[in-house]
Picture 1: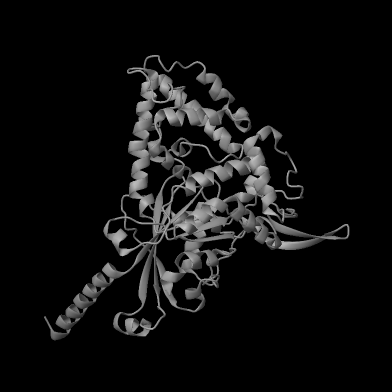
Picture 2: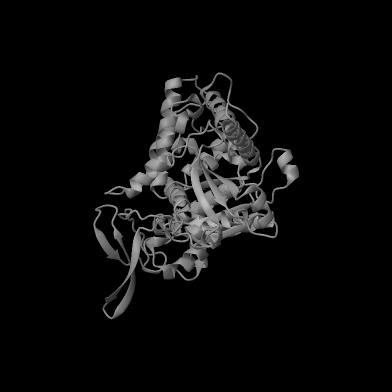
Length: 489
């Protein structure tokens, strides 16, 4: 071996050793992204990653605006057991000649983006001279918000859950969706013998009721795996349903159909809910909660009240607060920062965005205060992960209308539409939602806001790829600055 070869081999060995040592000290942050169905989780992650890789539109992310991010790239995720978020397929759907919204979140998935940046601060120059630029690994964890609705089940017995589920099914706003299920329920005998085929039919009919409730715009429906079973589709662990149960403290008789349902419910908690909490949810550092408030407002006060209830249940599952070295040694984590984002802000004119943010804050007021009180940093904003519209003012009958122009989802045709205005007092929406929760039949119907607001659905725009620029968005950079800006300082 020549001296040059020996020297080259030695240098490569030193470089590899430095890289391994450096990777062992490179910080990583686990960012959870959740929200109920149709809130826009898949588009949020796809657009976020695309704009991290091509940062021309990230002017509100300080490290990008200051030119301190040298590179960002996708890396193998640290957890080989979790499915990988299919970024490439979702991005291709948005950049296709005839773009379409990518498939929604159906199961948990992960993606790692490694960001190489120049730090700031008094010791930044010395650190960079000795070790070069720093690296932050951003591990994005995508999971359905419906699964969070399962976490409270850990503290409930089958009897408690069954009673609450049957009470909910008999609410007036669920009458249409629940009628077939409640009629079938009358044919079931909890004291009868265990019957596997009957259990399967009961679970299917119960799931159909939950799906129908979701189509009505309701949010607080679960168990979550009945809506999005993932790998558990057809499993005995999701083959159960609520039945009338004995009085408090009693249990279904042994070898009865009711006891079979109770056993399946316990298996659901043990094999579905607990592993999700232990392996994924409890390990998050920061969290994004996406809320489709505009669609709920359009559906009416009962839908808003149901969304508020569902979000309260979801947010009660978080363990907010600052982390410490002691918690880390004990294997425990808290969610340090929580961002609540009202999605699809591009569906209304920018003059309505402050009102949308105010409505979101009003709907989540108690949860926001609880998280802040426990030490978590909390932020709320209105955003559009992928901007599907542009704004256009139209004069009509001597009046200027603030319109949005985009491709209609149903036809693909481009049109300028006036979405109307949201109430300038968010208390109006909160109070109407409370009245609906108390008495849905007395809640106002169409035009309940007393404004011209209406929700419209747009198809994704035809995107043109440009070097250095990700897809257009609204405040995605501001969201990222709140979530990880401190780690890039």
